[in-house]
Image (cartoon, rainbow, N blue to C red):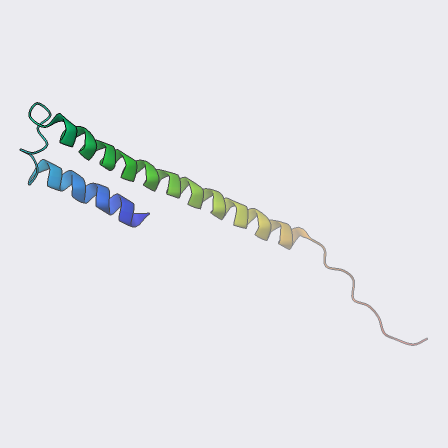
Length: 81
């Protein structure tokens, strides 16, 4: 997830500095649209991974709470009467 966010930030920085002439929407509309679709895809993927991670943490927390609330079976006595 961190790599997706980092890649989106790097693309944003490069698009604002190095590739600024190539990403001019009036001169190169195809490259402009492709660039922003890739940035958007990376961002949405990072958000979906974060939501998935949040749901997995909640599920594990519920499982841990359920296992703590279960009453252990009584110890079996092995005394002979």
